Length: 525
Image (cartoon, rainbow, N blue to C red; front, side):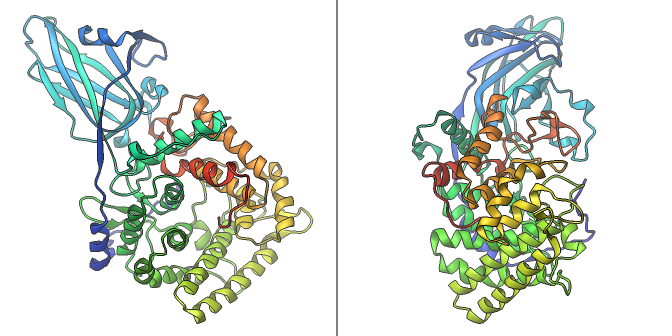
């Protein structure tokens, strides 16, 4: 477990004006009723073996104690379940006791959640035990769920009757107007499939904020927001939702003004007591990228000083040699890889943020700040070469480690001249072990580094192989963590807690639209 903070008596610094503006930007939600497209029964409680059921027979299927019914809603849904229940036999003389298990992917149905012993709370596992005292009945669960499959297990009943599921439906919820989105085929079948899965991933994470995942944690995380916003600019272009999230981060911060790594939005907006060095700097980058799309002067004026405060806070965490200190490195996420030293990565993210901050200063006509930022940028870039570049091995080394993440972030930070950066990324296979990329989040930045160095064919090939391997495993939305060589891997101590529709995995929609349709290198990260 890493980067988890518990600060007793934590009181965020709330700015009522900014939070009011964020509330004004709160989106309306779109709803649709979705019904199952198929059904089956698992032969054993935690079995992978299943027996398909013709859908029209489901309303006549009688379930006794220990039997199950699994419903397939066709694709990943986010919303509220309603069940219409009846019975056959004598009048019910005892409640129907049901277990409802919501699964984003088929494998989850056979997982035994009682065996999970990870560090993220078991309470996120999507299971409900329901007593139905009177039949027939229509029940609507109050919680919103993220799922494709629903497993209904009859835990107990009475010998006098059996339960029948007459009807099931999900009232979906998203702020993405997916019905109005016009899909344009690319001419590449696999790219089209990846695009559609990425688009659904993004849409199902777009609620009244950009959630990180509708299953878990249902929160606004800065690292996810940055990538969701990029995907949004290439698809739905819901600029108000991006603006709302930026205002929320600015409106509730650490008492000293730092941007929190994530926010709670219910019952009221509150910054979490977790701070990450790289995530705070992504606020600066995400703000500038939003302004590139909108030229929104109001937002620039409202959030400029807060963005610069993140830069100044981060620079204070550099030593006299202009290299980030241990505290900064240990507060940096980058990827789920606790054994990897992240000093070089933290240095590179700060260099990137300085470049974006300078663009903000120039937009603001704050020329003294822009010049100061340029000086700092050059000092940190020179320090990165002096501290981390190994002439003999011709790569970046962070406390003895030559991880792929360090190479990627130094390339994205433009620390090397273009030809040298290209040669480095051509040798990327040398740096893939032992510190492997664990998540689509890091794989996104790896693909961007390939694009930045002009290795477009290699970048597209990797996107197809990595995200495509999720499709081969049955994904219709993209997953939070995925290692094709170790499908059971989880950073949380058990894959039953993994999210299978996760915000930071949606970026192939941006890659395909901006890079792989026209084989051209774009500016930016």
